[in-house]
Amino acid sequence: MEATLMSARRPATLLQQQQNAPFGLPSVALPCQVRPRQLCSSASVSSPQLTATPDAKAMPFKDTCLKDLDPEMYAIIEHEKCRQSEGLELIASENFTSSAVMEAVGSCLTNKYSEGLPGKRYYGGNIYIDQSERLCQQRALEAFHLDPEVWGVNVQPLSGSPANFAVYTALLQPHDRIMGLDLPHGGHLSHGFMTPKRRVSATSVYFESMPYRLDEETGLVDYKMLEKTAALFRPKLLIAGASAYPRDFDYPQMRKIADSVGAFLMMDMAHISGLVAAGVVSNPFEYCDIVTTTTHKSLRGPRGGMIFFKKDTVLGVDLETSVNNAVFPGLQGGPHNHTIAGLAVCLRQASTLEFKAYQQQVVANCQALARRLMELGYTLVSGGTDNHLVLVDLRPLGIDGARVEKVLDLASITLNKNSVPGDKSAVVPGGIRVGTPALTTRGFKEEDFIAVANYIHEGVLIAIEAKGLAKSPKVKEYVEFVESSSFPLEGKLDCLQEKVHEFASAFPIPGI
Image (cartoon, one colour):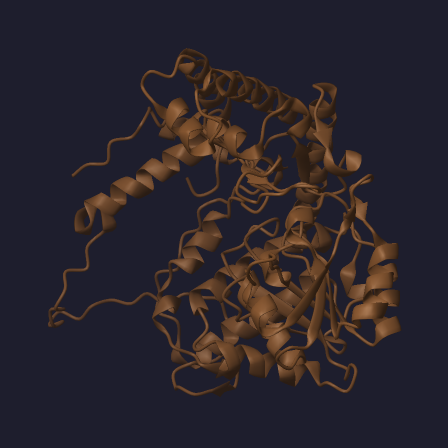
C-alpha cells in the first residue's frame, strides 16, 4: 500500500531550503576501505565497510525496507512528516532534532545490551559502547561548561521522569519529604502532585510531597511563602524547575532556603537545558547539588535523560555512587545505547557558537510572541517571559485552554492546554502554553512569530464564536460539535488552516 499524503510535499523545495536552516547538515560520504584491525580499539571515528562473502548464508528474515515490510506503518510516518511540515509546532516541550541524531538513533547500537557503566559491564562485547558512552559523558560536561573534577554525569536515564525518580531513590528513604512547584502553578508531575482524593504522582505515593506556589498576583514564585513553608515542613529535597513557568528561577534564594532546613537542592532543567548550555538564562550548576534534564526539548537531542551530580560528598551522601546505583541496578536495566549515541551527537552541536545563536533566537522569538499577544489583548502569566515559553490566561476572554487547543489543532496549530494559577480543573484548564524552540529550529525569526501570534488569535476568536453556538456547556460535546461535518464555522477554520499550511511549508525541517 502506498502512502497517500494529505497534500503536496514539495520535496525538492525542502531539500533546497535545508541548507538555510539553522542546523542544516551536509551529507557525508563514508569511507569505503575496511578499517585496520589495530585501530578498532582506539577512539578513531573511521567507519569500516562490512561486505558479504560470496558463500554468505541466507537469513531467516528478508531484511527489507520499512515501505515494503510494513506499508501501514510507513504510511502513518509519512502522514506525520506531512503534519510536521505543514503545521506550526508550538508545544514548548517539543523540538525537531537533526538528521545526524536520527541517524545515530537508528543505528546498529540499538542491538547491544550493556548493563552497567563503561568499563564495568555485565555483558561482553561493549568496547565500542563504552567509547560511545564515555564520549557522551565528556561532551555533556563540556556542553554545560563543567569541571570533570567537580561534576559527574549519568547519561543512561530513559527520560526526564525516570531521571528524577532515580535521584529520589538515590537521596531519599520512603516517606522522606520533598518540595516542588505545584503542578497547577507550572510544576511537573514528577516533582510530586496529589489532589484531595488521591496521590496522582508516584513521587507523592512513595514520598511525602508539599508543593510551593506562585504569587497569583505577580505570576512569580512566592519565595517568601516557600521559605516559611520549608521551615515548617523541613523537606529533605527541594526541587527547582518547571514545565510551564515563563520566568527564571532565583537559585541563590533557593540555595539559601535549602541550606536553612538541611535539604539537598535539585534543579530539573528539562525545558531550559539548551538555554542553560548557551548561557542565555541563569546557571543552576552554581548553586545546585544535582541537576536533571531531558534531552529532546530545547537541547534538540533524542528522547533521553541525564543526571548531573557533584562529586563531593553532600550532606553525608556520595552522590556519584548513589545516583549511579539508583539508575542501575536500582531502576533500570540495559541503557538505550542508540539514544546515548544520538545524545552525544546533539551535545557536540550544543557546544558550538551556532547553538548559542540559536538559543538567543529562541528567547528573542518568545519575547516577540509575548509582546504581540499582549498587543492583541491577551493576559500572560507573570506578564511576559524570560525563556522559551509563554503561558496565556484565557479566562478573561471567557474561554478555556481545552476548547482553544482543539480548534487550533484542527487548523494545524499545535500547542497545549495548560493550568494557570487559580485553576480548579486540569482537564479544562484556563490557559494555553506556547513555546518557540521547534519553529526556531525551522528558521523562524521575530517577524514570523508575530504572524504566528496573529494566527493563534484568529483561532481563539473561532473557538469563542463556536462556544457561543454550541448547545452544550460540556467540552466533550463542544469537541464533537467543531469536528462535525455540519460545523457552521468550518469555512473559517478551513481558511485558517490553508493560511497556516502555506506559511509553514515555506520553512524547512531537519531530517525531512
